[in-house]
Image (cartoon, rainbow, N blue to C red; front, side):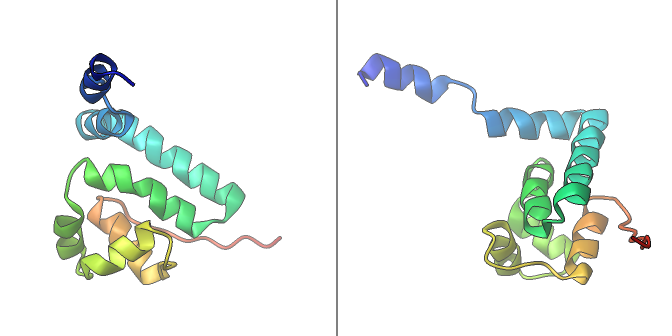
Length: 111
């Protein structure tokens, strides 16, 4: 890659930055994002995926350290969860959703 291409690439908008900006500025989009994550979770049952994909929503409003302090857990715990080295408990999931301004409700359906 030549210097001109490198310079262009450096100035090219990054997907994650654009996503965070849209999540921060557009509440309707943020709600659709969350609804989509919950729908995916209902199909996959993968808690790690759910929490990992909440990260842009969290980072659109807070740093990881700020959010950890807000919800009352250690930042290392959040980093472990986001790096998929730890599966969050229901208690931690509840704190994450509360920190984002949502009430986490569980339901049980007989299969």
